[in-house]
Length: 231
Length: 132
Image 1 (cartoon, rainbow over the protein chains, first blue to last red):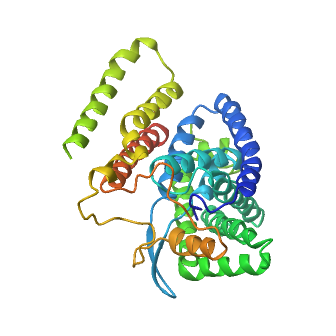
Image 2: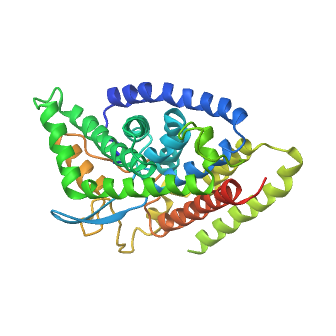
């Protein structure tokens, strides 16, 4: 999903940075506010930040239609549910910056575009998928599963849109290009990997619920009638 | 190789020294982190930025690692994103800080794994296993 250095022309570099930066700023504000309300919030941000960093550069081989390919999950669905979507954007931005600086993964000029796809689209889609699943009274595991799966799909849809926009002005069709790239993503590896990510996020939420349900209670992810554990 | 070892020794000495000398300054976590990143960039990366490694080995045949390698372990970031970007007239270029040189990428990934693992382990213990 990482768009490599040099792919985006200057106008899109500026556009994606302009789109991403307000979300990052609001994320910083949310961290400052929530750390006063909840003592374990900063350690939680640290844990999930490291998790998103590891998830998003961890190549997993997937046997797909055209042979073996490697791809990586995103982790922003999980961080969006547990930290909130804006803080999840901030966490994704830091992870992507470190990867661009030191791991030759992504790029500095494409950072805004990558924050848009993995941070903004991934986080908000995962968060809303979780909320909708909760409204449908699904169990915690299935809510987490949908959050992880949908965030992964939307992240790659975002990348497809960013690449599809490159054909504008060159006689190509944006919709056709986006659909083609997204279809290839799904058929090669991401179709399988998004299900894997959903399962992982589901199990992580169940683990947190069993170990410290107070965290989910403080975050407003479960109702008051569940048992409260001191955090 | 000797130069590399020497460089790492300088880096480690400076980092240890910074721990001793900066402690009385009572820097906060964020400031320490930026100092750490600054050390990495200043000490480890100038040779990478200037491309010193390639100049030294000009006369020796070197098996280069490129992002265009096709194989079973090719990531879709390269095989799909790169392919379509090239098709639409915007081919990828090398990163500004290119760590994809020899064992350097392995070194950086190992450091990142150790640091990331430590942060996760420390905080998971603090959140889920330590009592109030």
